[in-house]
Image (cartoon, rainbow, N blue to C red):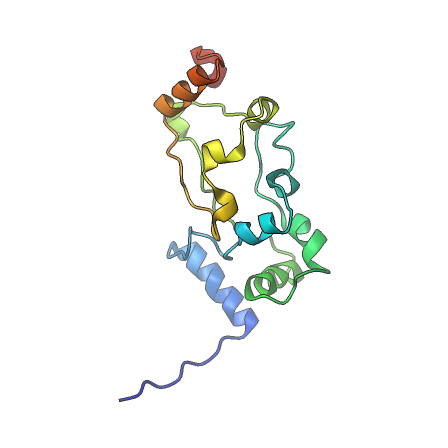
Length: 166
């Protein structure tokens, strides 16, 4: 017996579904409302710092705002399904509810700063895995005190507790 064809969702209905999926915790991919193709952006010559601005001078790398995305996508590569969802958020004047992939537990009392790592020329992939090959960012490296201390010792960075816990 043949299955009945599924009805197609309009872009506004798709946006509503994606928002409810995110809000409800039933998330696709790596818990992201839009499948963000890091691999395609890297292939187009976009560096991590282009979107995650401030990582070289501030503590947080930050998740880019929709304004940052639309700097390019208002004019370029605006036909794909993910970009169409992005434009829906933009038209509704809403930020995309991106889900953080990496964070330290509050109880760890870690005050991580990206800037010193970038100044030390530590590649983003050392802590985040090969995001350049990922369609959706996924946790590829487990951050524990052991992995951080091991890296600090290998790179002759300080392993004094106060470096990370202050």
